[in-house]
Amino acid sequence: MKSGLLSSAILSLSASCMLMLPLDVMAVSRGNMPAYCRGEVSGQYGTKPMYVKTAKPKRAKDGSTTIRGTVDKGSEGIKAFECQFDAKGRFIGVMALTSDGE
Image (cartoon, rainbow, N blue to C red):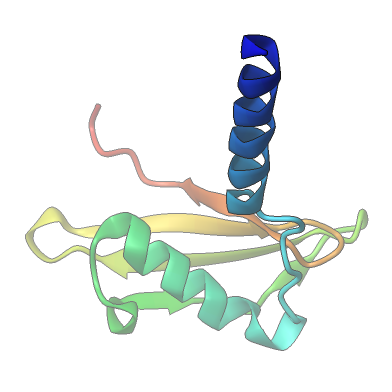
C-alpha cells in the first residue's frame, strides 16, 4: 500500500514539474528581433531599454541571426554585446563583447 501512495506522489510531483517547463521556445519575427534583443540586454545589464542601441540584424549562411549593439552603463561605461537567434528565430542569448576586467 505504501508503494502505491509513493508512486502517486511521484507522478503528481512529476506532472507539476513538467507544467513549469516551457513546451517550446517561441520564435521571434525578424522585424521584432532588435526590440526583443534590447529587452533581454536591458534585463541582463540592469538598465532600461532606452540605454541599449542595436544595429540591423545580420543573417548568417546557416540562417541564424545576430544583432550587435551597445549598452550605456553610466559610470561603468559603454559595453558592447551581440544577441544571437537560431535559424528558426528563437532567441539563444546575449554574448558580451566588452570585458568587465574580470
